[in-house]
Image (cartoon, rainbow, N blue to C red):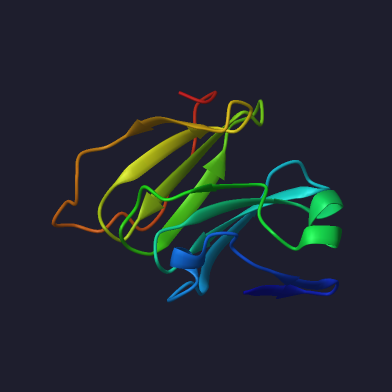
Length: 121
């Protein structure tokens, strides 16, 4: 559960309810939407306008196997980049609600942060 001033937001999938403490948060549009990364590798997108009634994520991605260590959004607000303790990085298209790319499977080293620099390249 993620609790803010207005209530509790939950993952909508029952299989993701265990070991899902929030490890990373990022605002997506500066006002209504944000992404939460969890200890179990889940990335959930919330929209406060929708969550006020349902308290559920509007979309979820479960491609990582360990905690989400970092997130960044490109300047256009279309792509979300995440890194994980499992040593992988993923890119999501938020408009299509789809995974665009994922790095190689579980690396020996952890990726602990991510930043989009130099004009998004």
